[in-house]
Length: 213
Ligand code: B16
Ligand code: MG
Image (cartoon, rainbow, N blue to C red; front, side, top):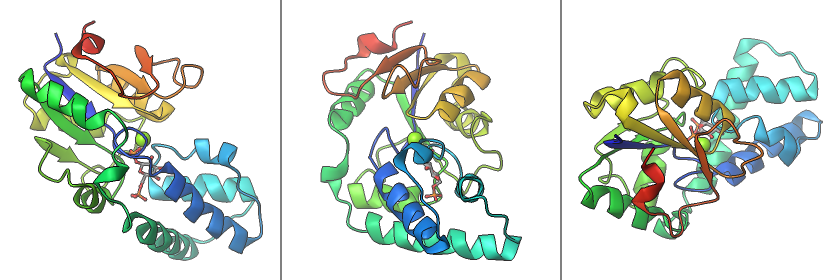
């Protein structure tokens, strides 16, 4: 029986993937190679440095660590400029309604994200005080598909992993949920998220029936 819901942030609660892409593309343009939206799929749910490594692999570049740190910082500066403009209107359709449903059913809710910028995003969209637990990229050592982020969320919520369901838009995130012994609802396209237990296109009209397994 599901007693807690754990939500990924980017791609589930808000659509920041677009801003990540614009910032990475700007970096790639400066380095002299093309970085497409298809390449960008590989970065979803992946930590900042791991994303940079994938991006450099796409461009066929090998760089020293200090140079990589500078590039990651530059990308983050551009990304931060994009997310400063976010408002509560950026919360994806149906998310607030579904969060209310889970609360009124007495469930616990957590955020489980790879992003180190989660605090800024939550403040911009007005959800800082909504979750019972927030686990972000500043609290985890091992990136998805390692289950650390979701196991920490379950621990904070004092709920067994088997009673948790994770909402994820990234393949690595679906794997992380399963690696942690949790159910996973994919948010996005079934052909990409086929490993998830169920897949929804988004939260509009979603009821608690969805999390009955
Ligand atoms: P930051 P999620 C992930 O967030 C994004 O999907 C991924 O594209 C990004 O690289 C990662 O956060 C790190 O973000 O640079 O802000 O620390 O999907 O796990 O909520
Ligand atoms: Mg995501």
